[in-house]
Every structure is written in C-alpha cells, then in structure tokens.
Length: 419
Image 1 (tube, rainbow, N blue to C red):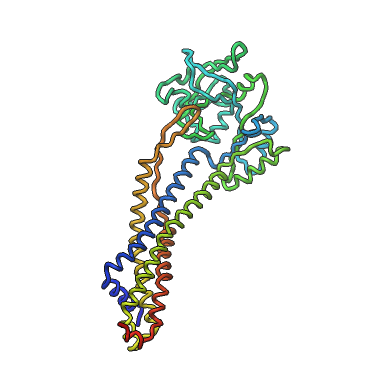
Image 2: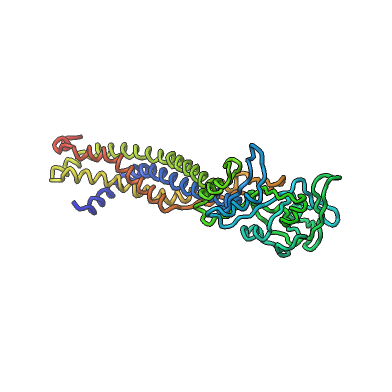
C-alpha cells in the first residue's frame, strides 16, 4: 500500500473516533503550547534584560578603577594613564578626576543639583561617548577653555523640570569645608541631554570641568580616579582587560568592569533558566505521549478483527505497523500545528500580564528614583518552533510504537477469533 493511501486510512480512522482523537491531540497541543509560549516569552525577557544592560553600560567601554570597592579605592598617576593608553586593542582612552566634597551654586546662591564634579578632557570624553554627551543647550568647550563647566541634565533641572541655571551664567564651585574650602567661579558652557541609565556612565547628575582647572584646584596634584577605555573590537574586551592588567606591576591593584563579560554571564544564566522552563513544559508533552500509548493500545484491542482480516488478505506486518504509526504521526502534526498557534497566543497573554501587573522598576540613581515600567515583548524563534514541532512528532512516534508493533505482530487466525 502506498504512503498516501496509508495516511488517508489513518486519517479516516481518526475521524471515526473524533472525541477520542480530539482529547488525545489536546494533550499534544497543551505540551507544544507551553513550549512555544515559554520559549518566545523567555527570549523576549532575555532581550529586555540585554537592552537594559546596554542602556547602563556601553559594551565597548571598559571602566578601570584603582583598588576595589572592598579593599578601598586608590589613584592613578599620569604615567599609569600613559601605559594604559598604549595597550593593544585600546582604541581610545581618557581619565577622570572626581573632586571630593565639591558643591555648585548658581548666581542666586541656590545649590545646583550636581552630586559628582569631575575633571576631564571634555573633548576626549565627548568623542568616546558621543551619544551620552550630546548638549541640548550650548556647545562643548574646547580644550583651551579652562573657565567653563558642563552640566548634566538633572544637575541643571531640579526634578527634571525646574531650571537652576542657564547657559552663559556663572556657577560657583566650592571644594572642601569652610574655612578651608576653595571657591572657583566658572561659566556654564553646555547642558547635556538625559543620559537615561542608572549605570556608572549616567552623567545626568555630573558636572564636568577641564582637567587643568582640576589640577589647579587640587594644588598641582594630578591623581585620577577612573579610566575609561574604548576597545576597537567588542569581542576582544576581555583580552584587552587582561592587557591592561599586564601594564601594572600588581594586577590586583586595579579593578576592571568588562560589560561584555557581565552580559555573557547573564546570558548563560538566562539560557539555563530557559532550558529549565522548556524541560518543565516538555513534561506535559510526555504525559500526552503516555495518553497516546494508552489510546492506541485500546484502539488495537478494538480493531483486532480488522487487523486479522487485513493480514488474512495479504497485508504484511510492516504495513499494519505503518498504519498505526501514521495515526500517531497525524496526531503529532495536528497537535504541533495547533499548539504552535496557541503557544503564540499564550506568549502574548503572559506578556500582557507580566507587563501590566509586575511592579514598575525603581531605578535609583544618586539618591533619586525614576519609575520605569518593565515591558516584555515575546520573540518568536523559528528554530524553537521547528524543534517543538519535530519533538511533538517524535514523542508521538515513540509512544505509538509499542501499540503499533503489538498490532503488527498479531496472529491473523487469533485475531479473527477475537471477540
């Protein structure tokens, strides 16, 4: 008998027992729905996490700090900065000096909301982070201008709305505690746009002054607190970090934040979680397989005389095996197709629930908080769809093999006698 005829016969047998076939197929549908729904939602969750990490950290920027947060922070010397600049794979390097206990006030003696004041070559920093250091007012000062200051967005706008200072106005910078404090008055050259991230490169609450002015305020002391290194190849970030460690006599003297390595680690964790969820979802498909075995075993018993007649008129064992396996394959195909569609629907439903009922994320930065609702959009993977579809067919074949083989091994004489 040809394959087409075998499939047609299998389909006819299924349609004669519609309720039984529907319930058997439903088990497969539930399993595939769970797999597709969780897979697409998990991929959407992974991309959401990745996007939030990219907002917090530029993948091609390494952040080098002296010492560590546990053992205490130190300082970099100009010679060490020069050695880091010469590291292979470092396309661009700039260093920052943060001023302790620095406070800014406007011409009306009102405090400006700058919580971090840093000395930096603003041209280098803007070249390294052009998207983060884009002025919405004014222009970035040239390296020769030593009497200017650049303010972050929220340093200039209290609560993001009330303006504290305008471009061209003067601000007074007070460093230290009176009567030993140092005061300097500088002109506001530019106001930056919103940085929009809670990472270390969020410059919304920062104020930038020229390096030369910082050295003057620090009474000639040139001590840097942070080095930013832009790598030429993101994939080589970890290797560049090792090269940077090699230029120091004691590699434990520094700590390097490698965003790519951190993101890869998070990806590995999310992969493990997603595989675990797929394994849990697959259990329902295995349960459906047991149901298929049960139903097909009952079907073999009901159709014993039919099998005997087929074998009596010349049907071979392999044809009987193919007929019963075809029914299992059809159940797997139908269940896989319907489950794929319902899985997509389930992922959208879960996405809606998670996006609307999970508490909004509180992004805390420098003592303030910004509420941002988490949005998870399902991502449909063609690979996961094909894998789930094939898996449903394989499960149906595996669990349908025993009753199909049992039917093919029936003795035609005994089968014709069966009541």
